[in-house]
Amino acid sequence: MRVLFFFLSAVKLSSDSGIIKGSNLTLVHGSVSHFYCDSSSTCKADKLGKRLVGPRLVPLLAVSTLCFTANAFAQEAASVQEAASVKLGETELTPALRVDYVSIDNLYRDGANEVSGSAVLVKPELEWRADRRLLSLTASYSGEYGVFSEDGLDYDNHNLDLRAVGDLSSKQRLITNLNFRKTAEEQGTGQAANIVGILDDQVEVSVINAGAEFRYGAADARGNLSAGIALGSVNYSNLEQFTDGDDYSYIRPYAVFSLRLSPDTRVLAEIRYGIYDFDDDGRDRNEVSLLTGVELASSSKLSGDARIGVLKAIYDQNSDEDTTALIAEVGLVYSPVSYSKFSLDIDRSLQTDDQGVDNAGSTISDDLLFNWTHDWSSRFQTVASLSFENEDRDCPTFDYQTMGAGLELNLQLRRWLQVGVSGAQVSRTVTACSGVAIDVEGLEYDRSVVGAHIRATL
Image (tube, rainbow, N blue to C red; front, top):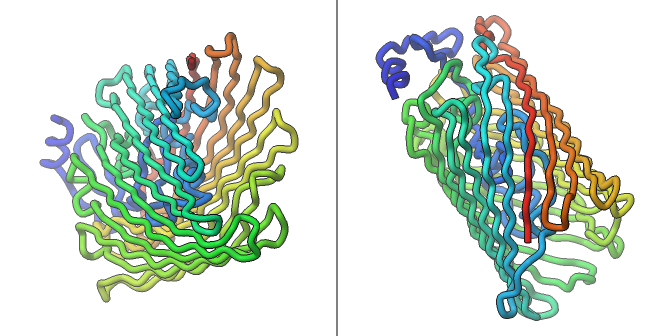
């Protein structure tokens, strides 16, 4: 912690540029989007307050357009659901283990002082599933343990998910979900996204999400009605100089009406009301969202759902102007043939910025992730990915854009054993507000990652 102590003792604030400078660290105030790194080694933007249950539960939590701005070296691969399972009475237990070795040419995402290094990542997965006629229970754990050539980058991440789906009758269904994550934000992401320099530690964050939804209407009924509630909290446990006031909790009730247009297609309308309570009272706000969209059943080649709408954010403090924004949530999968799959995830959302700079308000975040998974034979698979992230922030803070591309090659040696290699490239550019002088050196960077992995199942 010597670097952090020295930084705190030598801080100098430049109010014109929104940059805090220390002897060997620079913090540029800006968005504090709440990112977490989950078990898939993919740094993700946790758009808290969205629906946590229903058909978009998994896509919402799995959307990642930041996969190349964080670890960048973990691409989509065979999921734990594809592994063989062990019967435990009337239940099933499915384990899997993946180990990656990666080489990174810019560990700290610092364009001014690039440091190369390597890491070993160990990623266990375990899923328990019980299906009865009217009740389905799922419990899953995934972890990631990273050991880097630079000790300050080591981390251990944990993700626990519990889900229950009960059919109360042919027309009534109850869905509940509880999720807990304990993760470390990699340097150059999350709360440390605007820091130029090397920290002795990483920001540690605990996230709890819970939700319940009641649906009325048979699967083939003309109309369905759903009502539910999502709630949760985000808590940072260290590095208070970067995270002070950022802890928050939220509660978001919602209602959805859907109308069946065809056996595979439903059009929907949704209303949400969210309440966000930050430790820093200046960021407290209420939100009202109106959305419309479509849901596509998984029985067709094109599945998933897409929503677009308007969000109105009302801040508790009179000094903060209310904000209206266009929002979108898209999670689509296209499988023209059984051995090839395309997926597209888009998320446009409103986030709250750090209030450390005068007039720093909200951020409009646009995230896009495109994946193509193709099985060329029963043994050989490729996964190609493209990502784009745009942070449009109120002045005087800067905007930035991040683009990434990655490719993974997998070879199935045995039914239970897979090996592969991967590579990824990511670039970030920064755009300053007109008339505001910001030294972008260090904030803009390029990062390349290459790796090899092995994955074992039963």
